[in-house]
Figure 1: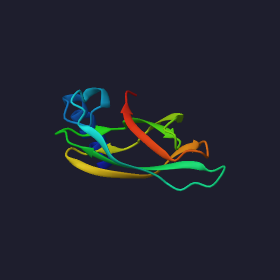
Figure 2: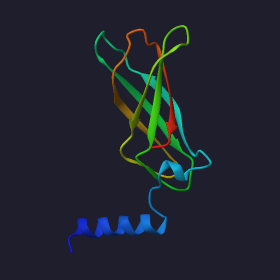
Figure 3: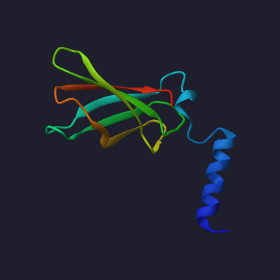
Figure 4: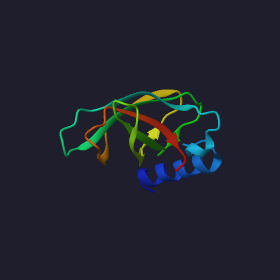
Length: 120
């Protein structure tokens, strides 16, 4: 067998055995958390780009969690909420940074963004 096939089979076996990356629904303790959120500067009519720093305090890795971000104006009013899947692995007990996550065009009055993990 080719190495890539063996790697795939090993990953499948790990997930089947419960030792591979888990879905967010398998995290009742809330071990996956957003430690920093940055809304990148926007011009009128451009897409919102967000950078998230994510900490996984679990002893288990996670894969492809969904995050919902609320885009907020100066008065604290939520102008828009959007959901996005963060494709990739989130290794156990590590911090990762995901840059330039595209949330599409948003209201130009947006001043801050608040993000949280949500069920897929």
